[in-house]
Length: 85
Image 1 (cartoon, rainbow, N blue to C red):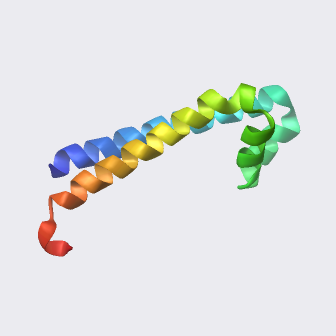
Image 2: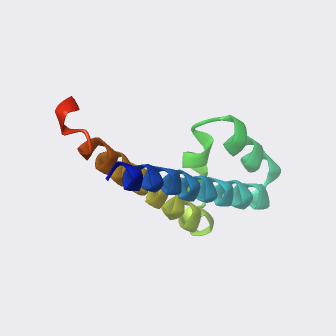
C-alpha cells in the first residue's frame, strides 16, 4: 500500500502543477499584470479565478483534482503504518 500511496502523491503533485501552469497561462493571456501577480503574490491566483471564472475554471479544477489525489495517496500511505497512529 505504501508504494501505491507514494505514486498517488507524486501523480497528484504533477496534476496540481499542470493545473497551476494552466492558470498562469490563462492569467498571462488576460494581462501581463495578472500573470505576474499570480506568479509572485499568493492570493492573486484565487482572485484571478473568481474574477475570470470562465477562463480559469478548467485550470482550477485540474489543480483541485491534483490536490485530492495527493490527499488520497497520503491517506493510503499512512494506512500502511497503523501502529504510528
